[in-house]
Each structure stands twice: as structure tokens, then as C-alpha cells.
Image 1 (tube, rainbow over the protein chains, first blue to last red):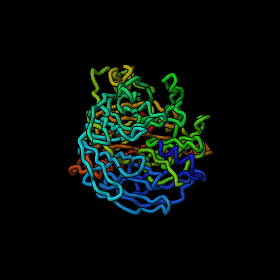
Image 2 (spheres, rainbow over the protein chains, first blue to last red):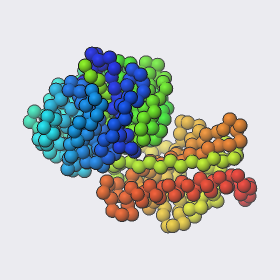
Image 3 (cartoon, rainbow over the protein chains, first blue to last red):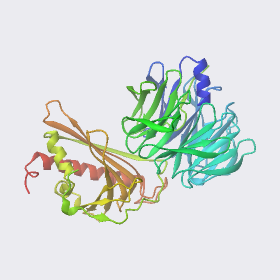
Image 4 (cartoon, one colour):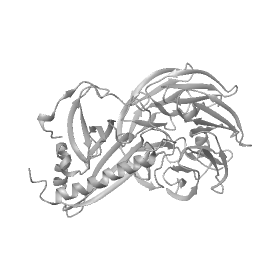
Length: 309
Length: 185
């Protein structure tokens, strides 16, 4: 999201890249116009998104296609497909755009790619069934949610070594980091909680109750509130970070999955998988705005907002 | 939910499934239009013990309450279905914040060829209040919970199983509500 925030400060028209699992496409949503301006064919069953607003590329993980599609954000076309011997889920890109980190769910590993050449630099073991990935603000640490080992891997990106693992709740999946980088938020799907981790001590400092089967989390641009998608009950939990408590639940269309914060418009965007829409939530009033129709079974796992300079 | 008290019983343990949700969930959406009032459709669904009367695949149903299945330890309702083809399905029945949702279930166990299954039945009422559209949506993984699952436990089997279950069930519900079958003992 750091990249997204930078992009929001300098670009007029950010986009959301929404992976449509059911039709193997990505919907490109112009967030100023609040409509889909392009639908791009990618690999089979796309899930994850990472946006590099510096080099104007969006990376899409195709879990069944076992590949990563690279979209040029100027032409809004796929310019490269990286075939991988893995099942990619979550992915994120370094600040400069030179490295791509991809979670390999079925081999309990993280793949580090050189984005210029598309070559795999490292294939390193982490915990079981890694899903979400998140870089620290300075890019030196990669956090990986290991769903089946109930912990978060902490990886030094310079040495590509796993430093340690932080135990969290049952089945961690989505991750996000605070705007100041001091807190990491981890969604625990089976515990119905969010773990708050101090990124200096790498200790869990709070565990916050949310709704049923939560998947993904995002902080607002001021670091005051968290928004969590509850897939099992079709709602968004809104959390006040000063009290670390849920202050409201907002009912949304079916099976909300991916979530991101549009800092420019102060809106929360949520992909509702069952109803094929991108839900738009006003971050201040917590009122729903008109939803945007996207493709079939949208997931948008990761920080899916970015723009061009 | 109004339940026949004679069917209520406490079971000792309804174990949480140990499998994890896979990265490739499947979806089925089926719907039917029924010429009836919303109250009539709601009545049919709220009587969980009536399910064998309207769903042609369901042979028997039993309803239990479990006090161990939820994190808070609060009682929850569990429905156990025995299908005519031998499959079984145990589901927790939950309350949904949307009043239009008449049923929201989550799989706890059974041999139905899916995993991590959630089913939602939603009602949409026509302006004249005499017609309703009932939509049954399912999200689930294949039974093996693998991308390259063996035959019989794969996505195709899971989608076919849920699709047939929903289609025959909704057609059965339509006949049950629109004819006098519901009124008969």
C-alpha cells in the first residue's frame, strides 16, 4: 500500500486491478470514474495482485495456471507471462520494482523473482500453506502468513533468509501493515480474529475479535482504522485502532474477499466474490456507495490499487 | 428458528474440520421462481424437519444443538442430512444479518463430495408479494481440497454434486409450496 499511497499523491487517476477467478480475467477499474475501463485476459483462476506504481506494472498470480501475468499499466495489456513450477497465491513487489515475492501454497515456499529477467532467484521454504505476503515499509523484511502452521514467517529480504516465525491465531491468510510501518495486521480465518504485531519486537501485542471467516485486512491512510472482510457472514468489520476494538460491522454483498484503501478518494474497495461486484465503502461515513460490476468471482487478494505518474 | 422439540438433543462433540481452505474455491448459483407469498416459502424452510418432504434427494434429516462448536461456547444448531444416494452432510445453521437470507449453513462434516462448504438461501420478493425468487448460492472446495484432486474428489464432482442438489431441491421446494403438499400432514 505504501506504493499506492505514493502513487495517489502524484497521479490523478488510480486504478484497481481486480482478479476475476471465474473468467480468468482482470477488471481494470478507473477509480475517478468508478467504472471498469478494460478487461484483460490473464492465466487460469487469477487470485493475487501486486502493483508497481514506479515501473507501471501490475502482477497477477494465476493459481491454476501456475503463472504470473505482468500487465503494463500504460497500455493495460499483458506484456509477459512468467510460468512457474508452483501454485502462486499472494504476491508483492519491492519498492523499486526489481523483486517480486510470490507465495507458493503447495510447496510451503516463497519464490523470489528478478522482475527484469523474469528468472527465479530463490525458492525458499517457509511455514505450511503460505498465502498472504507483505513487505515492511523499508522493504528489508517480508512477512508471510503460513495458513496451516498458524504463524508468520519473518524473512530478511537482503539475505533471503527466514529469521523466525511469529505464532498467531488459527489459519492466518491476509496481511497488511500500518502506514507508519510499526504494526502488522494478520487475519486468522478460523479464529475469527486479527493479530496485531509490533514490527520492532515481532511480538503479538493484541488480538482483535472480528466476524466469521475473515480473509483480508487493510488500514486506512491515517492508521486510525482497520477494515476486515468477513467471508463467512458477508460483512466488513471496522476497527478503531486506538481502542483496538470493532466499532461497527457493515453488511456487504456476498463473500467479500480482497480489500484495499483508496487514499485519494478515502474509500475502501472490497471484492465481493459471490456477487461479482467491487463494493465501495465511504471510509468516513461508513456508508456504502454504488458498487461497481466486475467479472466473475472477483478475489483481488493483495494491494490492488495503483496508478501511473 | 422453530424446531420440533422432540428432535432436540445435545451431542457431545462436533469436531472442527482439520482441512484448510484451499486457494481455489468453487461457486454454484441456482434459482427458482415460486408463486407464493414470502411467508409461505419462509415457513417451508424454517421447518427444517420438513426437508425430506420437499427435497427429493434428502432421505432423512435430524437437528441437534451443539454447545461446543462455537468459539464462545454458545449453543448452535446442527442439521444432519442423509441423502438417498448414501451421501451425508452435517451443517451448522447460522443467523444472517440480512432478513432476506432464510438459510445460512456451514459444513461441519459428512461424505458430500465437498469441503469448506457454505450454502445461503436468499429470498427476493416481487412487488405484488405473490411471487418470490429463491436463490441458493454455494461456495466450497473440492473434497480432496487439492488443485489436482483425484477423480471423485475433484472440482467437477463437487460442482456437479452441489448443482444437482440445488436444482432438484429448488424444484422440489417450488412444487411443495405451490401445491397443497405443504398443507398436508
